[in-house]
Length: 169
Image 1: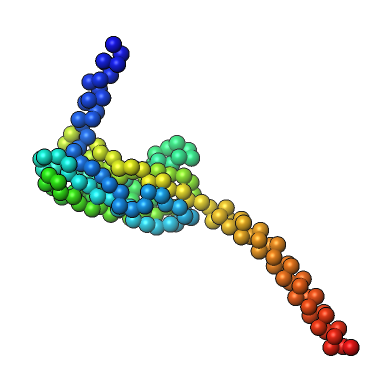
Image 2 (image 1 turned 90 degrees about the horizontal axis):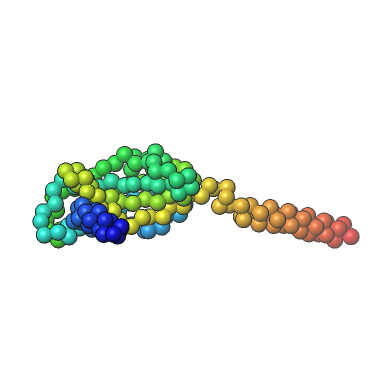
């Protein structure tokens, strides 16, 4: 009986999404250091048999490290909405929203399209974003340099000393 009660809810949710498909055209993984800039590019396709009017596209951000959804660390993209032109059946449009990742952390970014009249929302697959602090990325390099530079200096000092002694003899 419980499963029968859930069936109408599931059908109502599926029917409430705008009849469009959102396909990511940019990479599904972004890795870098803070102040990284890129564009989030996605295509919105009308998969219905009627014209879609007044759709609005925007990005949703989730910080996976602290389980909060917010947008202040993504520059102007966090406040950007794009009003789409009317889409005829089968027609597509490409949307580009610039991103600037300001903080380090693990994030998921999803492109969303909403029908303001009905409130229906369609979502893309999430983009996985990993921003690493520069010091954490360079630890290996620092250790290698710290070990090799003194050896090179010691070798150069020994070579110069040997060369001086040979000249003196």
